[in-house]
Length: 366
Image (cartoon, rainbow, N blue to C red; front, side, top):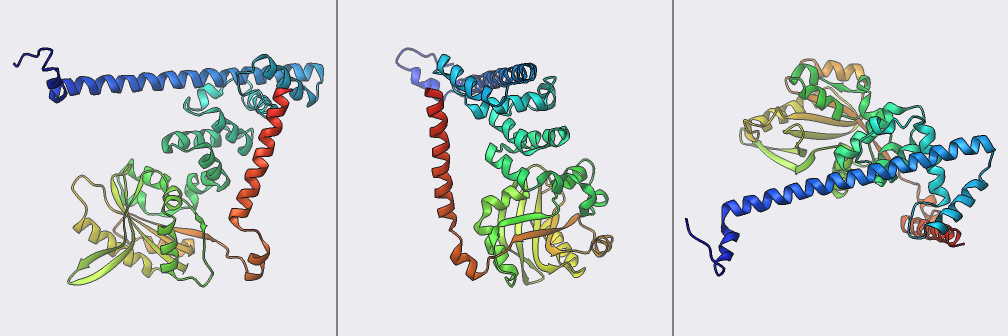
């Protein structure tokens, strides 16, 4: 083994064992930092719950009204000028937090990784008694790495109802996929998919919807759900010397398989499953590797008759789902001239937010 002296220390940078040591130290430091951040976050949320519980108890006993929050915000901010979080709005959120979880059961029910802002979104957007829905959104937030804004968008879009109610879904996953892959794939499917970020007319063709989805790929991938990555659009396959095009080819890193997505305007027709089944067979033959799972098909149409769709899936060899999608309605030309633009609305909201923040800052300084 080569000996190192003070002039040859640079050799450490190319030594394999040194690199492994450095990598291990970095990994352990990151884990320690994450544990510390989670611990601090947990303590902060526990503190907010305790403050909220005190407010609930004392306000009930003394029959104080909303003026209590004005006084507390002013006095606490004066006593702790370097500590944020004592605004009137946040104190009300603490009270609401303690009301939703009267016995501090949030510690067992929800992941520790949720920030206070995530908790506030759940408090404001999900009913007090619906703990199961809160838990579902909390787990999805951690698994998907949603910001609080993304969490709010998913709640407002009704993701829980669209993804968790299996009775609304039309698939053959139970028959064509092994367990637990079939259950996981079933959970991923939504009914319906909401493409409200697209504004196309009622007479738009399939290629216009396709172009719109590709043009808004970030929103589209978020609507599809966890683990989806775009592999190709208008993906070409060749069978017996003839060329065919797949609307969208995806790969799902959670299921480790390809997804073939076909988009149809109007009603579902049984022949659509035959075309999709053909594409799935071609991808399995030409692209799928031994370590990949069976390729899954997702047929998106504007409207389906569930009975016809279920009949169409009975003799299909490949795993497949038939789901509806919704587009936003294009506004009439007369209204578009009257209504403000998106930029104008956002500018107005930003100004409003600044006014609210300034008001709260002034209150805290008084």
